Image (cartoon, rainbow, N blue to C red):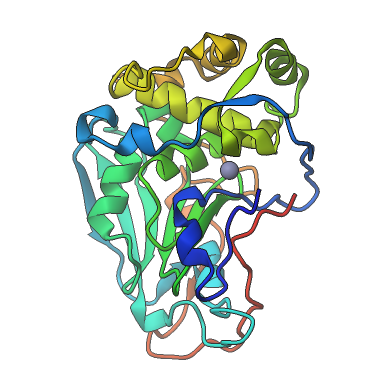
Length: 306
Ligand SMILES: [Zn+2]
């Protein structure tokens, strides 16, 4: 399945199915077509009505003083727009960094949202979208980075942070956050428990899930979040018992990270990032926001790398 691309004119027709992630260095993913029946064609039905989505929790965003940028946000901003357009995805003067806190997460250090001022996804949509994850699952996401998709778009997780260009469906927040909960290095979805669960079932949640066990886990986790915290998924007319082993295995693994009303926590990043200690946090770039980037990084399409 072609997942997504940022090539002009092509990606726009693919936006509904944009989910992918980049594999961090040293990690690998099993590449195989699971070959299961897709219970649903896609997850459009899950977002079709507001009351099917997990409820929004009030979040508050506080903008950083200008001139300081998390490294991963800075690096995403200075990627070229495309292979034929060497302008950066976001100029420093347009890059906004926010601390975000939520009413159901008192005591946790703020999440960091990094947004280009021309991103299709608004700050409010981003803050609200992340709040549709229960406190535990949300806690394992360190940063959320949103950029303009320049006619296309897509998203991925590096296991710690989630990135997107364009305007993905709301299930995108759950999907990428589930990758961040598949710690470390997507170890759960590549392990025996998960793969035995897949083997014992005849279906997966949707066509995208068939890409590999890691994408399947992210989709099953999303399905569970919507089923438990949104509206019970009884409106599709489909019998989900064909994936009961996956539902049970993901529910057991995620535990109370899937439940509203549980505690938030400061998650250590598997890339050396520690979001719990702001003063000690590494990799904050300090630069004049009116300056240009010294170096533009190669265009990195939002295609999967597996
Ligand atoms: Zn994914």
